[in-house]
Length: 95
Image (cartoon, rainbow, N blue to C red; front, side):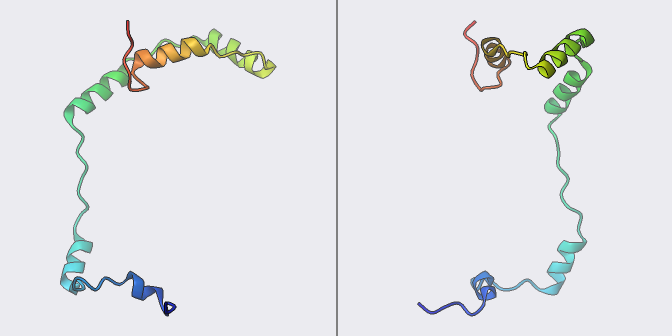
């Protein structure tokens, strides 16, 4: 096998013509397409943003202290159950 003299030969596509300057300029001057978000997603996101969960400053403080002391234990069974209930894992709860 003959060694490659230039990688540009590999990257050049010979199966189609090079775009002309007018086409390249037209693409460069045009605005990129704008993403559209379906209204159902937008509405759901707005509702979720408006519904803030309650904040328990004392509970947060207690957990921070437990983490600092190295005594915080995660209840993995409870965490897994909440993840399943929320549909995070792509499966539904059998309740």
